[in-house]
Amino acid sequence: MDMTLSSANADASYGGVRRLALLAMAAAGGIAVANIYYNQPMLGLIETEFQHQPVTGLIPTATQLGYAIGLFLLLPLGDLVHRRPLIVGQFLLLAMTLVLAALAPTAWLLVAASFLVGATSTVAQQIVPFAASLAVPEKRGATIGTVMAGVLSGILFSRTLSGFVGQHAGWREMFWVGVPMALVAAVMMFLTLPHHRPASRMRYRTAMHSLVHMWKHQPSLRVATLVQAALFASFTAFWTILALYLQGPSFDLGADVAGLFGIVGAVGIFAAPLAGKVADRRGPGFVVWIGAVLAAVSWIVFGLWTSLAALVIGVIILDLGIQSALVANQHIIYAIDPEARSRLNTIFMTGMFLGGAVGSAGATATWGHGAWAAVSTLGVVFALVAIGIKAIAHYRAAAIGKMR
Image 1 (cartoon, rainbow, N blue to C red):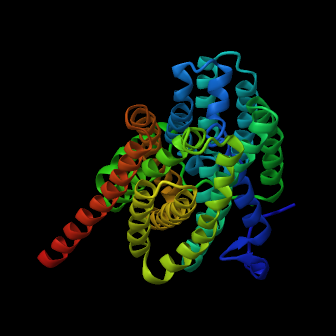
Image 2 (cartoon, helix red, strand yellow; image 1 turned 120 degrees about the vertical axis):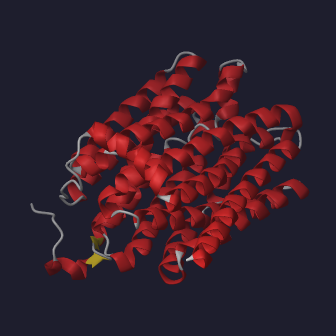
């Protein structure tokens, strides 16, 4: 069956992408990215099983680092090979790594398995630029926003699911649940993704070298990457420590409650399509500013108001800010070069998840020294760094414009 898009079926498409394929992409993206967040609400349970070995604190960082390295090494393939078999194959590899995590007999092996889970979960970011490539330019922001809504659903509801399963069945069972989900996503992608020729015929080695050239010669790419890296560091700092904070003496709550905050943060899901539409109309730069300011405000709420109500309000603001900025920054980078969207996404997402790894590691370290107050300070600093980078870039661009 030929699934190639054509003008004849434009009425069954959204912005150039078939509705069924778009929904399947959103769902599969959510299933894929969910795997890198399963461990966060369950971290306390994992620590208990492994007798509070310090190495268990590295599990979220290893997952984020694996995702960053997987992005760097695997995403360029999206420009070089047919995306459908690439995406399907990566989902199959993801299922295998989840089995390794579920069977890990020691904390160190779980750290290693978490790294591999992170690396293979990058299939989510093969899907997003694919959707952008299929969309017509005037609907690209909305299309990205729709797929990202699915990705964000995976990010947020993964914590709710893993918190519940971990609390009532065990953390290993959560990884077992992830295996058939990855296999279902592979089947969905095989059945619904259109055939699409590779955007470039260059070799993998040449594609990797081109990343350096893009970084040097695309200032908008550098700014978008650095801003989102700082914002994502702020985001992961919160989610890495939340379960530990809630199980402490101030609240004495379990992993299932930590997971429920994923539902609270689901407001960010609605922000993604809206942010995409606003970016189409008013420009993505405006949306990035709003998102960065909201992230800073959320940490002020966390730090000054110590209660469950503050956590609920703060996580809504944080997710709205981070996800809005993410969609807008992706809108910016995908407009740079249509034939290099996977490589542009490689740089952007690698930087973003390196920022996430820094946020996880920094939050773990500050938690040990200054508890929640120190983590809140770190979170607002990350958000202010993002605002500072955006401000410097804005004034530099204005100065260059005046000189011309």
